[in-house]
Image (cartoon, helix red, strand yellow):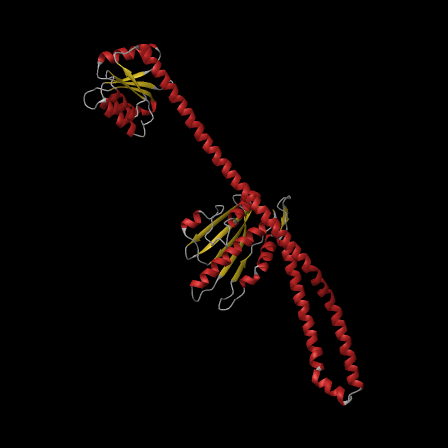
Length: 428
């Protein structure tokens, strides 16, 4: 029993009160007295947290001990306080009734001091043990929750690392395989132009010195339209060169996007280059399709310094946010007429409170409700059908920004029907 707690004795008999008070005080117990059930309940309203145990007489005027006990156990504040009945009633029915109301024990009158003290000590010890067990249970539950959260976080991280490593290897492999044939095409276009020029020169000399060829040759020149073929072949070679260089740019973007540096140190990188490479990969989803208009991408880039980061992981976040924006716009286009889908990408440098950069992705799509927004970054939460989303994309994105790029921040603003903004803040 703590120094501030006490035992409450409830009895209408002054003699009983005197005997019990003397017995308990002689053993160092602090006590308080109540002459009836009503006054006991009134006292408990103010000091319930300090009451260690209640000795409660059964037969009292007003409300008896049974009713007093029932009210104590019905009150959440006093429910756990041990109650020991004091009574001259020794019949089984009375004992069963008292115990069924929540009492822990009975003391029969007339009192035996040693018995009273023994019973009180036992129940005080039992209450203390109960409190300790409750504390241990609460601590155990907290530890379980902490471990569960840590395991979930680790699971998400492992999934993210495995997913990104797989994608990185696949994309890097595709880029590498593309690079060889594209390099061959690019390198051979220039000699092909030279050969074409040589052929054109020789054919021109034939036409100059032999203006009247045989009928068969003349007819072949007309049928094959050699002049147009030579002119158009130059145009075709130019188109091949432009297309090959375009593929080469895409290959470079793929390799830049897939930089698997999640396990290495941070490096200085151009954030705009990463965003542009991601947009290039998503270009096919931005183009018009059927009756669907093209998605406009409006870039407002600030003068950003190079940022020390994990470029591959940062590109993964940009890919996720842009892909989500495209999906929101596609859904909006299904439900709206005369709708111009737009994605705004805005970047700027912040000097206060500490040097940082902001990257904002905003769309004018369907937006989201407040309830969805509250759970947006929870692992495994998704509003997509099971075959369309895992619910890990945004939780992984937040982990990349806020853990890998601490003290980075990924936040969201959205209003149903009005669109969504994702804001990334990275330290410089």
